[in-house]
Image (cartoon, rainbow, N blue to C red; front, side, top):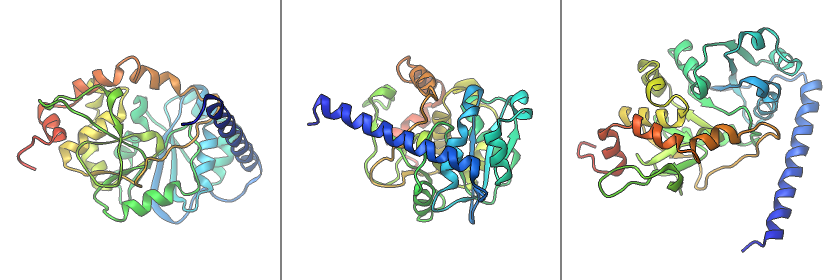
Length: 290
């Protein structure tokens, strides 16, 4: 078992590595001329807001140095003033292939919903990313490799395993554990932070349901997308046997939404309001028509 000192040293080491990566990405943003796009037939989509727009370039640059790069990379903004007065770091990325598009404010759903609506019908899968994460060079490659094993499935780098009571009711979100392995299951709950790839048919299905997420899961895009997967009978699996974790950008304040949804029970409330009795029975393995 790692000692308290050992854990502290480990945290310092991770912090120093993150600083090093961010420094390199900042230099690249100022000097690089190479496109952030590549030949992979996939769209990477993300959103940002407020002060985080100043630092989202780190996440985008990390995608742009991947072993495989997407054919399209789109940043959705819901603030017209920011859109019309982009920071220089995003202007430089625009010159290297980044698309920046103005849309309505859908909260965390902005990372995927405008793409499902405005880019329809999509002919390629959509990969969602977060605006405060530094992705590895293998990030997109490993997602694509797993997706190509079954192009009807949703593949996430990090999956939680939903736990249920004997009667099929869903236990609190904080009690869910990490998935182990790559097998698909209705209990598999993809978390967007580490990246998820969605097949075109799923995005069409999501688009058909419009903005219904506003009524039940306005701040829980992962919950809504999992419910859509259940209702559309789309499989969900993890890309690799173990979940992938990536460092976050210093100063991004990820704790705000995360603490609201986890510690304050926001996810549990939205879970109750989103999943129907049929959804819950499928998740618990009680569905007879499977």
